[in-house]
Image 1 (spheres, rainbow, N blue to C red):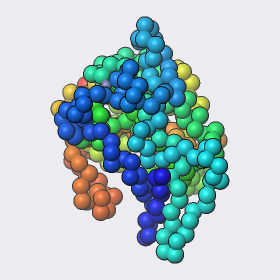
Image 2: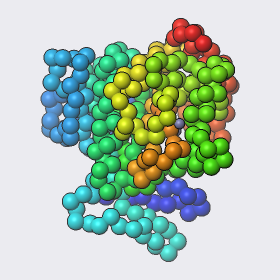
Image 3: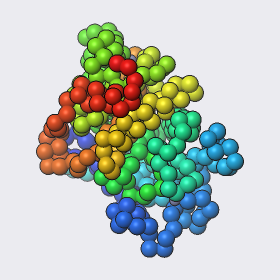
Length: 337
Ligand SMILES: [Zn+2]
Ligand SMILES: [Zn+2]
Ligand SMILES: [Zn+2]
């Protein structure tokens, strides 16, 4: 059973999940597992858990499943529904606090093809992946264990991927993850002071100057955040205020997919090999409807490892100011601005 443990000095938790140790590691070894089998290729039901759900894709009309979601075989969190256990309070053991790792950890197998990545998929297929994320966040929010959900994608070994078959993940823990909690605190303080959403204000400001705008379409904007943690970090946001990704419409997801692929194509010209993380931040379930949070997709190309300074200080140091990054990305996308 995975367990959440609270760090003694700071308001942060870690997950201890011994099952994670037995994961296959294709990328770190630079080859498939010794038996040559990929757990995400179709047909090998002996090593892949049965799907929770699947979505057909207009990009592959002849394929019975375009996108599948399966439980993570090596989960960091476990579904406690039906276990008979009440959702337990945090256990305090003298000095230390811990709690069972109840929640959800799911894997989206994003295409049946083994050798395939987002750059080779059309926007309408990426929109199906986002729709799958949206529906699974909605599904896990209807159970009483998770407090929030994040969806994320690790592409390439430097970004933490261990399997090469195109996939992403959903993690829904029983507490609000620290980074989301910090964003919410900042967003709430900004709202109390200015009576408006900080990211709506940011969009208005950035669209006024254009300096850090990367690309836009009908409903979404890609922007290089003023305080980027990594070179060429990009955020994609719905232009109209929306806190909850569960309420994104089909046309918003298509616009999000189109912009994501445009930014990835620009990254592809700048990074060799291209490794990146995508992270979707959406409002925690209990706070849906509050006026201050604004969902967004964070895109982080990875040219190096997180090292001692970042681990020891949460200070990120790099050489590329976001207005320089935005200009270079704009040139490669070829959009005005
Ligand atoms: Zn595969
Ligand atoms: Zn907003
Ligand atoms: Zn965020």
